[in-house]
Structure formats: structure tokens, C-alpha cells
Length: 390
Image (cartoon, rainbow, N blue to C red; front, side, top):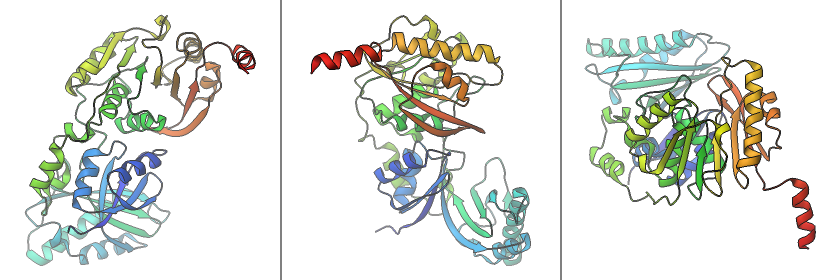
């Protein structure tokens, strides 16, 4: 039986609950939800699975040492006395990534330098040789997390952030992060039960993530590599088995529709969708939301991330959101729509009452994600109909 250990899955603010659900589905135990992270326990199989299957994880860390320190020199001393032979040797390359939430340590780069110095000096003293630092493609990636005076040293099993799925050939100016896109869809509860529409789809991230969710295709299958593949205890046979296992995939009986006013954005979306091998499930059109006179399907789910950037003049922006509300009311009756934005006044312009509001972060922006249930006819008509039915 494989031995179990603690792991930490990092995510974006507001997605911790869906990440926890994903980890439970993969068989994780002892879950604890923190800020932008979920800690859990499992074995090597789960470590590999979490990297391949988690849609809302940015990286999976394996803690190897915790200690307390109040100065950079104390960090250095603790790192230097740790037994690094279990994880690294002088022929390998490594890099140190640091995350610091502390009044004592105000410079995260300096913390990373001291960790690097401690590792190098450990090997120089013990073997007379030193491992090299490689920022671009290290064989071992080490993470130091400092919260006040508590330091957690971890091996990063993912390497490049897991939001970099590997299907993106090109991108528009402000593409949605893939982890955020997947989290937005999972938050709606949709798993492929009806048609899916993004009428302002940009480079197609929401469409691709939706197709993968609908068919239960693991997001990690497009990746070139994971950091754990370079670890001393890497099990190639186990990894190949998990990576090639498509027994969880399912048929998708509906369709995904994407459109955008920009022909360039649609061309990029087309390329990305083709790269992901999902073209037969996704229907693309160069079309503005204003041009919709009928919905592409009788009922469905809309998830969209309209422009709300600083490049748009306030009047144009408010006009856009008024038009979103107007089209939703008149064209998409019977649909549920979820809209991500960060200006409350933009939401007011939609002119519909949200049935749900969720706080999310898009990059550095504090955003809100609102749900609108779009009924057929006016509320007054619906109330009158209910009275006559009784």
C-alpha cells in the first residue's frame, strides 16, 4: 500500500469550494479549506491524479518541512541543516519560488535567495559540489511559503502553473485564465445537461473548458510535462496508466455556441478549439450580441465575461451592459445567464435582478459573478398565469 502524505492545492480566491469538491471526487482525505488553497492527504496516485484532473488547481505542492523563523538568517540556517539528499543532488538543477504573507519578511525575493543559498551551501559542505539554479526549466522546483513566522517548505509537483493547459495556440488581449473559466462553469452546477452559450467568447476559453467539463476530459492531457516527472521516485508506469485512462469520459448530447464581434478573436478561438480537439462540439460565429434575434437553442446556459476593461469609455461600457440586459430579456427567455464583471454600475445597467452573487478575482480585479434567471414574459404576466392555474 502506498504511503499517504499531506498536499496543498493552490487556487484563485473564490474557487476554494469547487476545488475541494474536485479533490473529494478524486479520493482526497482530511480536507481543510484555506485562503486560495485546500490542504488534503493522499498517496502518489492522488498526487498524479490531482495534477491531471483538477480544473481549478493552479499547482499541487508536497510539503516536506515546516519550521518557525523570524529572520532571513534563521531561514538560511534551517534550510542548510535540512537533509536535501532525499530530494535533490548536486547534478540536478533547481529553482526556488517564494510566497510571503508576513510583517517580519517584507521582501519575498530575498527569502527565496536565502533558501537558495542554504541549499547550495548544504551541498558544497557535504560534497564539495553544488547544484545549479535554473529559472527556465529546473528539475526540482522548491516552494517556500511564509505566513508570519511559520515557514513551509514544499516540492512543487506541477512546475508550470496548471492553468497553462497546453491547448492555447494564441490569445486575445485579455484572455480569461483557464482555472477561473473552469471555476466559473463549475460554480453554475452545469455538467453538460443542456446547450452552453458564450456570446462574447473572445479566444474561446470558456467554450473549451465547458466542452472538457461536459465530456469529463481531464485538463492535464494537453500538457507537455509535470514537475513530478523529474522526481527521484517518479513512477512512469503508474503515470502512463492514469494519463491514458479515459474510462471517466462521457458523451455530450448537446452543443456549445460561441460568438464574438471580433473576427480576429473568432479566428484565435477556432485555432485553440482545434488544438484541443473539440471542434465538432463547438459552433463559432462572428456576430455581436446585438445581432442575436433568436437563441441558438430552446433553453440553455449562458456564461460570459463581457469587456469591462479600462480601454472602454464609461458611456460605451454602460451602453454595452444595457444591451446585454435587453438581449437577455428578449432573446434568451428560459435561459440561465451568469455574467462576470467588476463594476457594480455595469451590473445595474443590465436591469435584471440577480438570483445569486459570487465574489471572484480576475487577475488583480475584485469581480462579481452574478446569476440571472430569465423568465418568459413579464413578472406580472407570470403572476397572473399562476393565479389562473390555481
